[in-house]
Length: 404
Image (cartoon, rainbow, N blue to C red):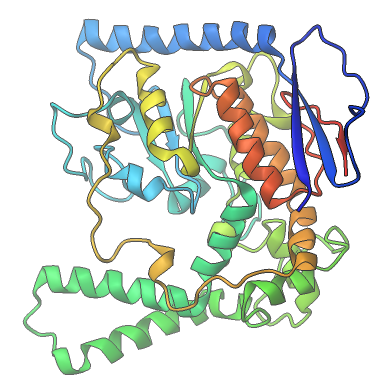
């Protein structure tokens, strides 16, 4: 690994070329903190969030989902399942509310003010089928005043998403979840001797009928997946994938670019969601959601970011900093039967090259997150450079000059 040196410049400072004491074993990254512009934007956003909190307190307002000021958007494999336990309505749209055991005394501002969205709810939020085919163009069912995103370094997230969605791991997870719920119901008609085999057969039938099993047949592990991605990840035809397709290179490149709905946590990426609500990228404009506040909770700094996000509404204290107790059926990839495989150096470079656009969106969201400070963004950049040291990541906050 090369040594990474970071030079931090304010708005009015000029970058001078690579320092004289640099060597071929060093890489230099210039981070220009556009402090003044960011401080003005964040001040306006924070004032808006405080007004929402004051209006709620003054008028005694209680919101019902989905008619809430905020949206809590849980991107897969970012720690959102843990946080959902702290949201009174932290469950899918088809589940009756409230659905979590959150006491009124300890309820956080984000619990009171947001509607929870996760993978099964995204088609309604985004307006597309899970296959990627567009519906008739329409506005969101509800237009929110602010957005909370759970996030994670893209390199770490895509590895976790790939591992979690593998058929054998899905079989294990869904079996534990189903067994847990069947046990809770205490159905006397269930015969313990054949319950396990019946459940596993039902789950595998579902994985096959929905195409999940077929989508992974080329890829027994992550290294095989990135080998098929190869050195030209953009060389593919953007056509719908069908379960019978045998072109493994094409399937891998579609998957890494979030085109295969059967790989659910790979399909739903940060860009698809931010574009859908018009808060980042070329879809955004000055008079739409692009001006609305964003809060970000990074998995790497989960409880610090959760605390800072809630404090944007004026509440002090630490009731929300406590990690919730997890049930045995919940999503913990570390306990799944197929463990994550280590990538070769070539494999790492191929995966990083394939997800560089994901990094641009990731840092755009972090840049706009009003609960994050400059040092938080530098910490996330440090993780990105450790994971993908070969990338030149272009963001509004971090216009990088990288010499490797």
